[in-house]
Image 1 (cartoon, chains in turn purple, red):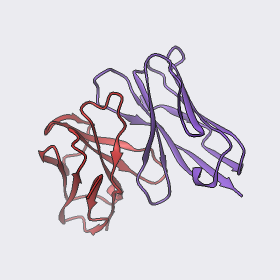
Image 2 (cartoon, rainbow over the protein chains, first blue to last red):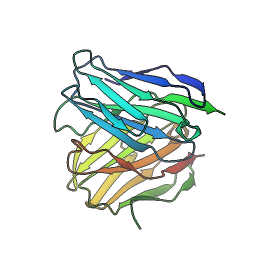
Image 3 (cartoon, each protein chain N blue to C red):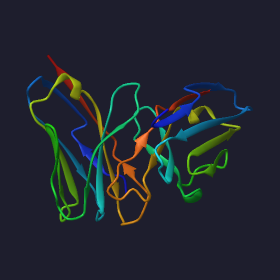
Length: 111
Length: 114
């Protein structure tokens, strides 16, 4: 039931782009994306609901392919502040409050 | 204060101790959650409360006992823990059932069982 994220870790130079993927073996109702910096709480980035919509947040956007049960997070022209661990979380059923997280993708941005 | 506040930030306890973790949210949310975050493991859902009622217990051992006296406060009572229970315990809240809304997390309690 736990979604699988890939890659597990990414190292970029400032200004480069990154894609983080999240896959589920089960049909999904929604996908959440969070970023956690070391020693801090996870911070909500965006949520995608069933319907395949794409969302954007500054230079960070995400897509949701419900047929493939996959979501991707796109980080464009990465900044040093984007460093951290990114988690996707999935909800299987509408109305369910069981948000299950993937294992995380560690993103390091170097100057 | 705003957001989700957890106390204490750090806790060291022996295996025979009894302690409690506290979580308070000032966001007007109706749902609250406990998650466990261990090194090299994903965030594990423990308990879910919606309007003070427990709606999810993710097969958590009975040595962890949650309490939700109202929609703004959540406790996790700990007793006779094991060293493998050492982890970061995160509280979160969301609006209603969370559909279309993200979770707001507290900074967590770093628990060490000795």
